[in-house]
Image 1: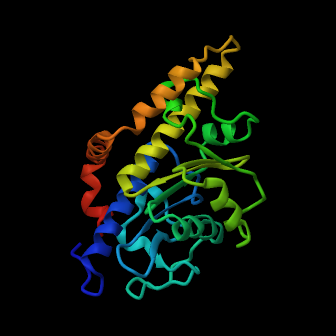
Image 2 (image 1 turned 30 degrees about the vertical axis):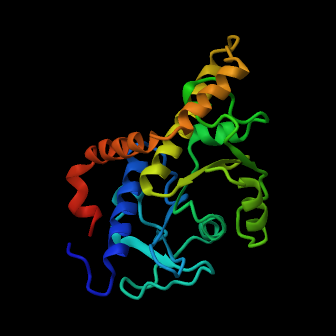
Image 3 (image 1 turned 180 degrees about the horizontal axis):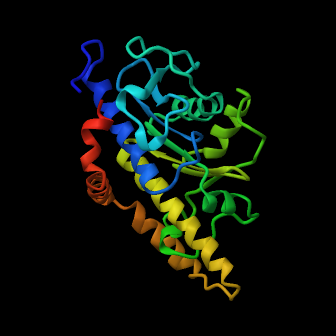
Length: 251
């Protein structure tokens, strides 16, 4: 499908990128029926962002299924109509988009492993290389019920601080970055770290923890300059897994 005349090139590219990310989240089995959300800020001064039309399966998400809203939750998309937007998704994502200019894309999931770690008092443990990516770089937010209150936005942003990943206690995972590639990389590593933790703990044997020095060293390795190239390579490789769907997601 060609770009509608009423939509800017920048917005259409954002729509295609976000639709692809929704499908990759489904490919990696990180969905929860029609719940959870991924959002992407559209370039421009308005601070508008795209979110899924509530009720569309992630596996079938298209550029035209995404709804453009402002930071107050108002639908500003005049091309595809007023699709329904989940209130809890708006509360969580709008808070971060408003507070963090470096978090253009935000992913929130309810996976079994993510929820399991979110229910554990000690949260993510430094058991694996994947987990050490987040050592000293992971936030936590206390569960307050379904995120429908605008008041919670302040506390959520305060808890996130300068981090790009957060465990929502008794709830799930949240991660983001300046692009869909970065956001995908963050949520993929966080999800895999949670999966490994739950499997390691289920074995019923003593766990081996790296030293504090090694934990800090590994976290620094992940944050060094040059990781961006790896992130972009990983995104391109992931897209190749659903390449045959490209004409459909960008429609």
